[in-house]
Amino acid sequence: MRRLILGMMIVSAIMALPIVTAHAEDPANKPSVDAPVAAPNDGARQGTAPSGKATRSTEAAEAWEAVKDTTNPALLEAFVKRYRHTFFAVVAMARLAELREAAAKAPLATFPAGPIPTLPIQPGPTTATDRTRPRAVLYDEDPSNPMGRQYAGTVTWRTEPIKGRPDELAAQADVDIPSRGLRMTMSFRRNLDQSLPASHVIDLSFSLPSDADGGGPANVPGILMKSNEQARGTPLAGLAVKVTGGFFLVGLSNVEADRERNVKLLLERSWFDIPMVYTNQRRGILAVEKGEPGEQAFKAAFTAWGQYSAAAQPAATSPDASRGNGGARQ
Image (cartoon, rainbow, N blue to C red; front, top):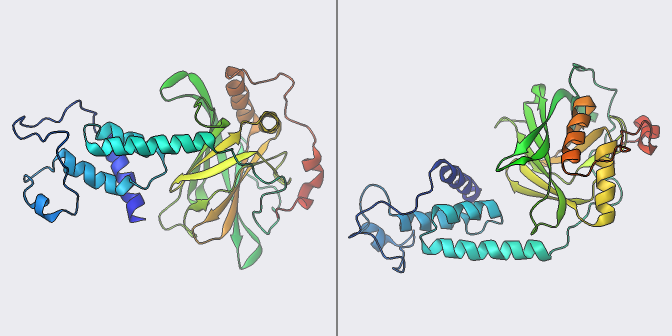
């Protein structure tokens, strides 16, 4: 945990600092690129280091110690940019190449054909909220209450350009559950990274108070689509991975049959179910409604991607809808 926190702090520092082409220091004192670099635990060499700001090599060594075991490509890329004139940048690039090669070769796993195990409870009656915006409902497991607890919230949908690609749209939902102190941003984009075997990528970013009951989400098994708040969800085919604390990435399967089925579910179903396992191992489900704003956001995004069919309209009825409250989450 200490290493992860330090790694996140390093990324924040990296993104906040400008990328310079050379370290500004006296050429007479500047170490050679090929010169041996003092390890962070090399007490003799540290004792001879200049006072004040640490040298670039020593800083790189300390940073590398914190990120060397990461499996997050973005973290390694940021490290290379910040310390590209050091030996450790070469090691980081080799590690980055290994991760990309493994990702390209590994088949994209799929979720089980049946329901993803979530809560041993049924959703209660439809929650009343401000109908000017789509709804969100958080269902939390409660050992003292077999029906669990429900927290009502709202969703704000929009489309926005992807950073660095102004012509590329993403559909985004900002979810707010005030009484639980939970906020989540869910972003949908098509995948343009040839090294990632996914048709679309869904980013999930959670924010909860530090003293939140149960802690934050430690695992998100997947995402399910359903026709209404009470229905049983159908899982999207893909793979969910935890990137950092509170941030998860879901890659949707690029297998043709899975891709067509996923797109149909995304366009036709009206609700999302996002199952979670908290750090205390209790479980929860965040149900998110599309509503008219969500439908428009998806239509705009999929149209921009050339993947929207005029015939793809929200289904009025479906097998899910017929289950009603009988569609208990398993």
